[in-house]
Length: 100
Ligand code: SF4
Image (cartoon, rainbow, N blue to C red; front, side, top):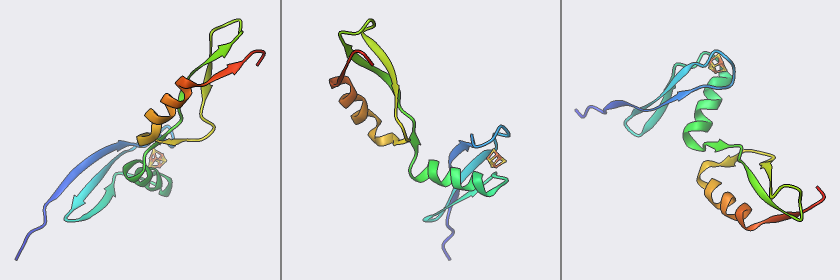
């Protein structure tokens, strides 16, 4: 008889509401389950954060002929964490024209 190991592979702090539940992603053999959430929104957040984490990107962009050389910008929707570097590189090459 083989025993599958159980281990916590990631601890996620839910940021959906101010309660801030600590959710554990637990590996049981080849399956992942979640413990510590206290509502459905928390489970959805943990699954998203574990399998496909995304972030709003905030940075600055160059301004041509502007009063200031840079202005702050943010993404209009969350971007996959794996793609943040690509997005930053693209924005670093971009420039907007004043007036804005
Ligand atoms: S699991 Fe539910 S109650 Fe806990 S922080 Fe997330 S949204 Fe709030």
